Amino acid sequence: MPDIATHPAGTFCYAELASTDPTASGEFYTALFGWGRNDQDMGAYGIYTQFLLRDRVVAAQFRLPDDQPVPTHWCQYVSVPDADATTRQAVDLGAEILMGPLDVMDYGRMTILNDPQGAKINLWQPRANIGVGVLDEPGAMCWNELMSPDPAASTGFYGALFGWGTESMDLGEMGTYTVWTRGAEERAGGGMVAITAAMKDVPPNWLIYFQVADPAAVAARAGELGGAVVVPPTDIPGAGRFAVLSDPAGGVFGIYLSRR
Image (cartoon, rainbow, N blue to C red; front, top):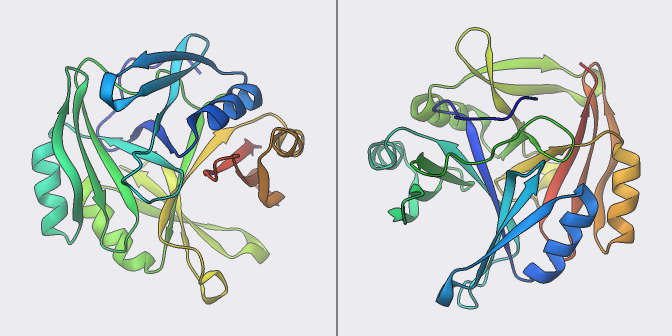
């Protein structure tokens, strides 16, 4: 896919790994996806790493502060024209502010939210930093999936906040899958799965997916590098093949091969 110069409002634009062990997770992802890296010393905030694919930013990583007892996780950002206005709207719709809105030097302005069902979602108002410079190719972010205990409520929240619609996909024995849309023909780069009774231990969350050419080979390589397979490589009828993995620090992510 051509290099990206801007992200339309209401689309996923950036991803950061908040890691309890950035040394281990950094070594894992660079080996797994062939990423380069640019480490920046942020003083008291530690090292901030931008991962690179074809010398374009593909993701980032920072160390979780010791006073934040949360597990390693991927943070996913949606581009917005006005972080303050969108934050106010999100709160009016039932979201909870975890941090912000705040300026990130001259790079942009951000807010971290919990949506009304408890899934963490970040807002990014771009300035000097638009977000990732590559999407939808092997090693790059390609999909963002909401796991929701109340899909109807989530549809209402994100529809009002970002203008997303929904489209249902029949996956046969796997059931119905919801795809987020923007306008009549454009997809927003994500989907939604209902958290069922059989998935009671799964919290509301957004799961990031990276495109790969061979999910089985990448899953096997992840195990060799100290990661784990959460969901083994699985076919999606008429769509592609995916797997869900975890890195050595416990961060969960998906990999996906599209057959469309």
